Image 1 (cartoon, helix red, strand yellow):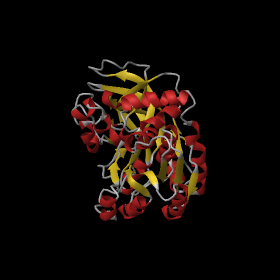
Image 2 (tube, one colour; image 1 turned 45 degrees about the horizontal axis):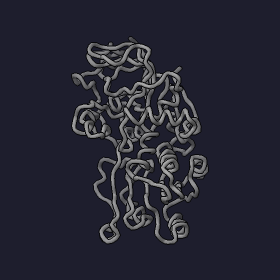
Image 3 (tube, rainbow, N blue to C red; image 1 turned 90 degrees about the vertical axis):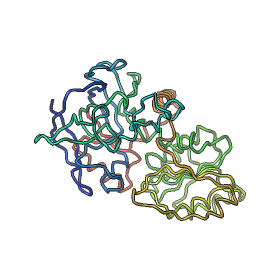
Image 4 (cartoon, rainbow, N blue to C red; image 1 turned 120 degrees about the vertical axis):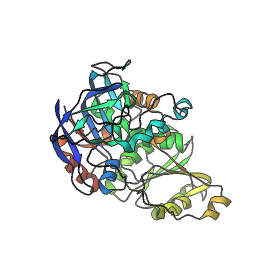
Length: 371
């Protein structure tokens, strides 16, 4: 069949929206008509080359839609099912999955392959017959896609798909960074550095976990103001500005957790983050750093003498098959905000406008709606 998709042909160039050919699903695969896709910064990392993927590639990894066709050997999905894509597939059988760490499933090793998990081939092709890769094996910048069932999480049909798509990455990543990776508890003082799509959800996670003070740090005033709506108690424009504020609020003990959710991570600011952190406090590094960055500025003496911790977090250290339905239930019960996360909506043809707005700091999260 023919459909439309946004393709990246070369780094540091715009997305090209083109008609493509889509093959039927193979064994263990499903064809999904997408309803919506979030515009996440991780796709921007592919554009800039910070994330080295083989090109050409269909972008997008935050998506939700309706199953249209199932391939052989698919036993638990059928046409009409509503699904959210997990940007890391989960097999349910490897050591990581079986010990409750689906975010580290061995199938994640295939993300760089950008082809079908089952056989390493492509179901997506240009009009001239060239194979196309898929961002995170799903390629949600398209009206239709074919993915492996390992990337699908079935959800209730009454959940709006243009909100459910946000659970494919940003919401769970931010929320889990606070609840799971940072282990925020009642009464804690939490700092979130960068309050875009992921940081805003780290704020929500910290609030739901019972934090007493949540300091949102971002140079963009609009994002700081919005963070207050999601549960931040204080804001600052930079970590330097936040230092005296946190000293005052905590009576000098500093923050129990500092969660790094900047648009582009930088090892040069890790020492600043640790300076905001209490004795035995924890810095969670969620933001993506350029692949070529191999150094960080940090006082190792401070790390040792104050028993501070630095931990990484992928997908908020969460389990997509458990956490996506759980967070959607919190949304239905009014405990988790998704509607206000969406600042602007676009069509597929407006994908470059969406990223222009993201770079300009105008969006908490942009969403492309296809239906």
